[in-house]
Length: 127
Image 1 (cartoon, one colour):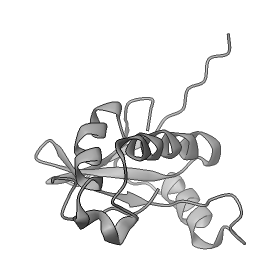
Image 2 (cartoon, rainbow, N blue to C red):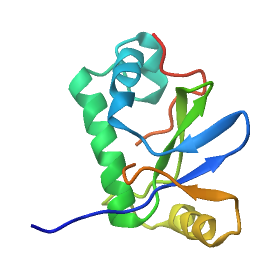
Image 3 (tube, rainbow, N blue to C red):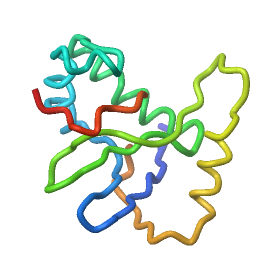
C-alpha cells in the first residue's frame, strides 16, 4: 500500500481562521447548496455535489500544493477562500504564484489536519 499524506496550513487571524476542509463540513455545505442563496456560487446543488467539492478541494491541495480554505468563525464554517487552477485553464496566472508566495511567506502558519472549488458566500453555509 502507498501512503499519501500532505499538509494544508491553518492561518489563524484571531477571530477567524482559514483551515483545511473536513468531512464534517459536508452537513453545513450541503444545507447551504440546497438553497437559492447558493445561486451566485454555482448552486443550488444536490448533496453529492457538495461531497464532490470537498474531495476535489483535497485533491487540488494534493496535486498542486495550494487550494481553498474553509473560513471558520466561532467554531463554524462561514465560507471559503483561496486559490485554484483547474485542468484546461489557459495559464496559472496569479493562482500558482500566489500559492507559492503564501507558502514561502513568513506568516504565522501552523500545520492543520492532514486533509484539506469555488469561492463561497462570506455569509456562510447556513440554510
